[in-house]
Image 1: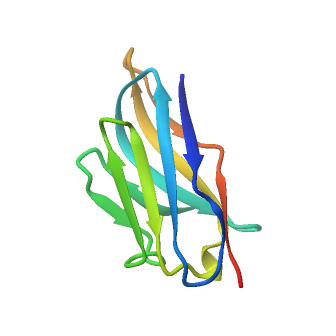
Image 2 (image 1 turned 90 degrees about the vertical axis):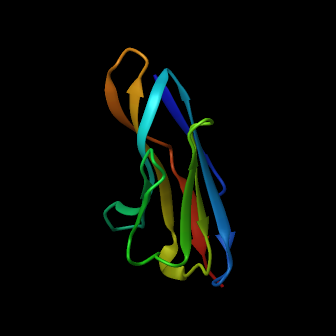
Length: 120
């Protein structure tokens, strides 16, 4: 199996920055797309940013220019640098990974989520 361990959430004021990290471990042959999603109370989970195995990236319009996603394929990690945070960015952030297992099966995994709260 595969585990995704997230870290880095917290409480910050508007305009401040946070960095989220996610490390995948387990029976991994390779990871295709990795990404971050978020879910605010009463809302559906939404895509924040993704990065493919070639490190190409995709961002939600609401975070373009403020957030940066990056990955380390050797360490099976993905980070999300969040700058100029706004109250609307408050949510539980989830790491996601499209994993190909050592025995060939492919499956998407989710982390447990980390809370980000932006408030003055």
